[in-house]
Amino acid sequence: MALRFLTSGESHGPGLSAILDGVPAGLELDLAAVDAELRRRQGGYGRGGRMTIEKDRAQFTAGVRHGRTLGSPIAVQIANLDHRNWESIMAPFGTPPEPPQRVVTAPRPGHADLAGGAKHRFMDLRNVLERASARETAARVAVGSVARQLLGVFGVDVVGHTRSIGALQVSLRVPEDVAYDEVRARSAANDLALLDAQAYEPMVAEIESARRDGDTLGGVVEVIALGLPAGIGSHVHWDRKLDARLGHALLSIPAVKGCEIGEAFAHATRRGSQVHDEVSRDPGGRLRRRSNRAGGLEGGVTNGEPLVVRAAMKPLSTLMKPLETVDLRSGEASRAAVERSDVCAVPACGVVAEAMVAFVLADAWLEKFAGDSIEDVIASWQRYMQEVERWSRSS
Image 1 (spheres, rainbow, N blue to C red):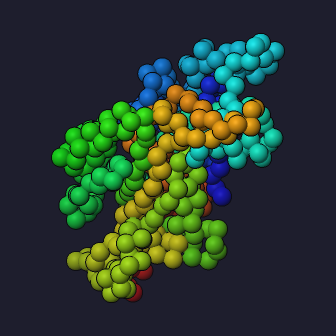
Image 2: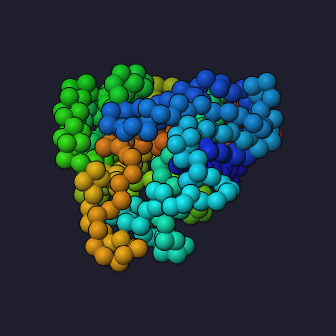
């Protein structure tokens, strides 16, 4: 890997931290753009009360000087404003409050509570849920924003939108109904990140119905990367294939249980003649695909078409009308613990998915166009683009 990052922090602890290593020196960073991505993650119809408390801002404490990266590890912190309500309960040091407060012994079906408790033999499952919380993804979005800005130097843009919420799907498709370059503006026009404005009211009604029932909803998000040249990734080793790396990154997002490149699951039901993209020459003599059913990836390598990936998010595990479980303290049947949560966080999941896709692409980009400074990377990229252009025309 050319890039790597770690995050730390608990949902109600003092804050979140991330260290990002491998960014070349000289990359100009826009702090406002990082904070804008953090605000996007906090938005979306169906979010809960926590998002009215937090005002996420990124504080870079290492690896950046006067707005430019130094080539050393980048450290970024995001404060948890809600920690003031949890100071004694989530204090890193000191004596726990007596009597104990907000102890969790009734694991939520679908959450990491019970599995994590068994792994570490915790009787207070707060030790698990505080880290397993999707609050951790704020740190990922900050890291992803840096990766997005690196890619932007080379004209690569990562955009996303919501394909479905619950059983309701957006009928419009990219690029058949909506051009690739229209995705960002359309998805930004509403707080569900929908390409089709006509789908908005039915989906809001579905979210409100779930809210009244004390229930939750999942959905599917789509992330598209524009401007990628052919040749990013590898066909040589299993762990370097770009589709595998994207799957790893997307499936690491809390509540994401499935992903696909292009329309992979639909393609599994069709014949090859209906799936594979035929090759021809464009008016300039370059080799191109006549369609993009493969989603921009073939054999673990980008093929020059837009990259299209999707992630399926399950309904959130915290229900206001909780499911049945067993209380660890009493050993008796009980109702699951209730933590403050969202009814639907699909648009926020889309922002996190964009961040993770941007990180994977930036990592693969720096593998292909390695350099200690951003100028080195630019020179390597320009040289490659000239060579692949000549190859495409002469083939």
